[in-house]
Length: 319
Image (tube, rainbow, N blue to C red; front, side):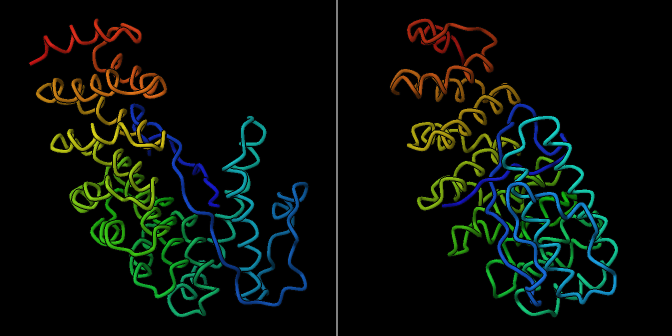
């Protein structure tokens, strides 16, 4: 079963109207190194990496092994942190990882490009903490790595770096054509993060439209719906309307948010978006009505509760 994480990101990465907890696969992999000194992480030891960092004279394998432990702890904390203190600890851990990546940045980059598979897996994830725009190019190159774990971690890293000038074409190809559902999920999440940060969505438009029908992976459907909302694809309104009836609630919720966003952003699309939302209210079960209701309130700037007749009267007046 997958574990979802909420990335620790600056607020600009998600447009407020489309705010959803983004889901990513857990980082996998362990560096090639001896294991006798590795820390067995338990709930009480999660932040031990904030103590003495890996020594500068450690082999790069050992250094990456220690980074892997810290990144796993960071992943866990981004999933579970719910209090101010827990989020502060997560932030401190992220700073610690960034400092250690910076210290041996060139070596980590070298492992990504030519190291053994297990080192490439960790290096791909670690470079997402570097903050260096020069790392975008080698991470994009790693999207052709033969190992799916390297590819998924490189996608996570690109989304974590979040530079809006990151080219999206290769990410869109993986999102649409990868036979691995985990990779398609990672690619969709990466694309969503980058577009929310200001990247042009042309490179993933077709992939996002196709992603609405990804029968195997609901999170691809979820993120595709959000992507199409962010890039203002009014041609997808009918498809998003159908997605409101998706059996997975988060998929339906994402489609509703995007429809409301599109209807508010483009006056010419208001009627079509509102009618799609109203149809779900009129034909759906109570759970779907509850999900759709806030989107109708958002697009209409009025609240008729779950009164279908009053909503129908309002929708009929729209062009």
